[in-house]
Length: 463
Image (tube, rainbow, N blue to C red):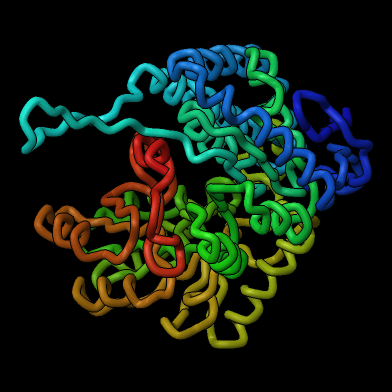
């Protein structure tokens, strides 16, 4: 069944469907129809947000939080419908989609409860009969630009802290996944969110996103997407001293040492590389192995890759969904072909079957090969050599990106050393590079982040 998405502006659902999004697993089937906003649509949404901001900021924080809690209950009651739509527009497996909707529910509950915790600080004063206190105040209108790979979780973890902090919001979801964000907005409307507090504008990033960034009414902008676009947005927002939060690209590495159990390490790497079809900014895409474990690990990783069975996310037995679009599939295949040209071998996968790309393991890769340097954003992982721990750490850090990094070892001292010296915002030991608890700060370093404010948890409220 085809879902219809609409803009949400000033409490009204509006806009005629102009764009069609096809099911990535069944390209001939329309999954969602959505409007295409332009600069005038953004202007109306910003006007509504600006009109609503003073009354919303004056609303007690516990009352703002209560609406988020009620929205979580609404979303919970629609869990299966929302998860099914998510599968049909993005391509995840149903299990992954259910997990993502659950994440959005938990995010709403977490920040909803935070409404009772919004306090300032008290400081001693050097002046007699004087007390000093601080009071947190909202920035005003927040613009949010979100990607297609987590189409309900990322909008939730951006808009929930903005709303509970007293800001009004204009959200621009990814063009490929308009339905999921619409479901999230509909839950908030059903929970009683006042008109104009949350506005949603669908459309192209180069139009809607650019208009949001350029408008002086936007006092804070949170963006998840490519480094190239993020850095341009940073320049625009910084020029007018608006607050900006960026989560951008990654080329996440895992270092597997000789003392690691090769089978266990392969399960960890496979989960990080092939889960979610490898379409996560935190996905493992390069693995450095020391000599004593390299052969056994590679054999185990190839076996683990076979456990990921690509197919329609709603079909029984599917353990990995399709690539999100034909453009992304072409990018993935071009990366594999370029790796071959540079001397790599394909240990498994590497060839598409319609919109499906099997879990792909590349060997014979050198650190200066393109596939070891550039983000692929698909189920493709390269296995590379490292002489020892010291060289492995240096290779992990030798990247323009620094989002997540992983280590597989039984050595506690090396685990602590790696955590202290890996140049990444998130460091995992004996865990997949993907995934993070929602109550802790998330973000990267170098070209993976603006290195200003983190997302999730109290850090998101600080932003």
